[in-house]
Amino acid sequence: MKKLLVAILLTPIISFSQGKEGLHYFKSKDSLVGVKDKTGKIIVPAQFKIFSFLKDGDPVEGETILFDGSKEGEKAEKNAWGYVYDRNGKFLYQPFLYDNGADYFSEGLRRLVKNSKVGFADRNGNTVIVAKHDFAFPFNYGYAAFCDGCDWEKTNDEHRSVVGGKWGVMNVKGETVQPLTKPTDQDVEIDGKYYPNQFQYNEKEKNILQFFEKQKKKLSDLYYVNFYSKLSEKEKNLFFEIVERPKENFPYYQVNTYNYRKKDLDMLYRFKFLVSEDGKTFYAIEDFNEMKVPFENWLKEELNNAEHFQKEHKDNPNKFINK
Image 1 (cartoon, rainbow, N blue to C red):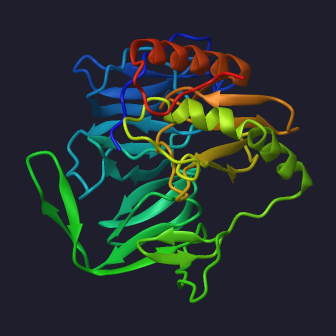
Image 2 (image 1 turned 135 degrees about the vertical axis):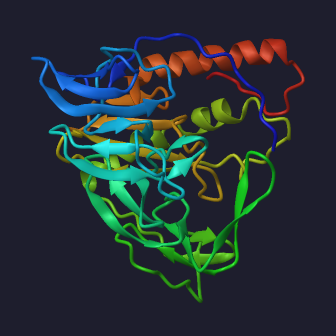
C-alpha cells in the first residue's frame, strides 16, 4: 500500500547517549577521519574516508565508534561497509552494507560481516551471533531468515537481490528454528510458514505494554491516516512487543510496533518507543540517529500532523478522529 509523506515538525530531542562525553571525531590535513578524547589523545588514528557530512570536532555518540566509510589502504570486505571500534579504540567488526551505508540496528541487533559471512552484533559492540551464513535479513518479531549457498544478483544499477541457496530461520540466539505443524493465532508467519511466538513478559513488562495497548486505537489511526487504500479494523490492528531490555549502557526497554501480520511498521525508527528502567517514563524514538523525545510531545506532534493531513486531503479513506 502506497503511503503519503507527512510533514515533520521540529520538537526537542534527547540523545540516547546524553551521558556519553569525551570523544570526538577529527580530520587530518588530507581529510582522513579519526577519534580523539577530550584531552587530545588519539583513540583511533585518522585513517578513514568518510562520505557523510561529518565535521571536525563532532562528538562520538552511542556505545561504540562508527566510521561510516572506507579505510585508507585496505581492500573492502565483500558486502561490508564501515568500521566499528569500542570507545577505547579496539576494532570490533565491520557492519553489513545496507542502503549505501552501515546496517541499522533492528530489535537491538545489527548485521556484521566477517570473511564474507553474516552475523549480528549488539549496541555495545558484542558479537552475539557469529558470522556463519552467506546472507541474513534483519530481525523481525524475534526471528531472522538466512541462507547458505546463495549469491547476489544485480537487478539494476543500484539494487541487488539474493538468489539460490538453502533458506532457514534463526532466533536471537542464532539457533535454527523449525516451523510449526499446528500454528495458532499467536505465532509468527515467515514466508508462508509459522514459528512460535518468543515474547514472554513479567508483570512489570506487562504493565509497560499495557500503556500502549490502552492507546492502540489512537496510535493505529494515527499511523494509517495517510494510507491510500481503505483498511479494515483487522488490517489496522497493531502489536506492541519489548525487543530490548535494560543492559549496560542502555537503561531502557525498547518497544517496537508491528502490523496485523507482525511485520515491523518501520525498520528505522517510526513508532518505536523507549521506557525507563523503572517503567515510569515513556519516550518515542525520533530519528535514525536514535534520538528520543518525551511520549507526550511526540503524540502531540503526531496528532497535529494527522489533523493537518486530513485538512489537506479530505478524501483520505482512513479517517482519524481525535477522541
